[in-house]
Amino acid sequence: MAVRTLLTRKTLSSFLRNDPKPIGTAAISAAASTQSRDLHVYTLPDLAYDYGALEPVISGEIMQLHHQKHHQTYVTNYNKALEQLHDTVGKADASATVKLQSAIKFNGGGHINHSIFWKNLAPVREGGGEPPKEALGWAIDDHFGSLEALIQKVNAEGAALQGSGWVWLSLDKDSKRLTVETTANQDPLVTKGPFLVPLLGIDVWEHAYYLQYKNVRPDYLKNIWKVINWKYASEVYEKEAYLVNQEDRP
Amino acid sequence: MASCYFNPIPTSSRLISADLSTKFNIPKLLHRKKRFGVLPRSSKVTAFYGLKTPPYEHDALEPYMSKKTIDIHWGEHHRNFIEGLNKQLEKDDILYGYTLDELVKVTYNNGNPSIEFNNAAEVWNHDFFWESMKPGGGDMPILGLLEQIEKDFGSFTNFKEKFTEAALTLFGSGWVWLVLKREEKQLAIVKTSNAICPIVWDHIPIINLDLWEHAYYLDYKNDREQYVNVFLNHLVSWNAATDRLTWGEAFVNLGEPKIPAA
Image (cartoon, each protein chain N blue to C red):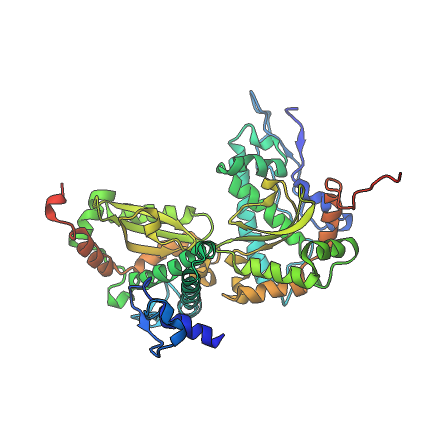
């Protein structure tokens, strides 16, 4: 088992492009029949603030469980699924490969979504809750009328989402339009459209708020705006909205 | 017809033995709104369905399921589904005429659920869930149910493994069920997302387990596996399951085909 793990870790790689940590540098001859690429293993990103720093909006206990247990499990299971994917691709086992897609989408999505979520939050003393300015602020006014109107829309859609999922402030890189989107379970925003970039994602799984807000998801949504990191959303917006050539713009 | 009474207890309660029904919090019988024309005096509709209480005290499943969990799960989540459903039915001239089973099936609308489906199915699922557990549950099924499980899963241990695996591989919120499939004439484990209830596929539910995080988060946090183990080892009511299978056998012949002697 351990040998098999080493083998697969050694040789898988190309699916992963972000924050990979290559491991398994030892050459293993049995793996030489496939392309010699390193398998990158995803790791749990650190938070830029302490677990308790978002209190009283989100308790330290929730943050710790959410980060150390939930996010870690997505990372672990994503890595596992990628190892299995490497196996099945290596064996040209099409049906096993296809079968893995739900685990990859769920766990990979869980990793992607939570990594964004942590950056979407900031303690009040570090600017959490300060409204967006300039480009993003204007764009929000353009598309939604006001920040207040956007917040109401996000809260309404987040509260109405059945089961587990996410509510997003999304930028369409192509049309430059801002929209509010929801995704089920751990589906990342890109499943809603190839050009969609998440500026802000709010986790409405029960694990994100249950210990503190119980069944009252609307209160959680109402409060979370006090620790939203608009600076991060603005940076993403400015980067993504102006990437395309200016002449493409209306 | 216009002034008939509507029994607020959903049809699934027929499976419950009589002594338990005395514990149900049965709301006053309510006038049903006149379908057409003027409303009679005192016909203000406040509810079509009542919130059924679990057939045990809220602390009776301790330490495996805490009173706090049941207080909130039943008193808030389940109640909200009932209230949401009643509000929706108040606006609908047709749907309030259905039994809960029919309501779930018709609002499922062959996979394009109407807005009432979520509440209706969640009421069904939760009624069924509370009755799928009992204090001192767990244990082993006996007689016909055990034989059927052994026939369809190989062994009871195998069944438990498959049930657990299904619970741990359910993505997001939802339910895991032991059902009797009519056509196949066998027991099977099915997973459903969010509110979906397998009666929409005409299966006969035997046991269900709520895998929304609100069902276990206060007691087990992210440890869904421990929750599932505790359910199977200490909570599941094989008595209720036996009743339901017996009921199901009225529709599904589980016996060997009887070949007439020559």
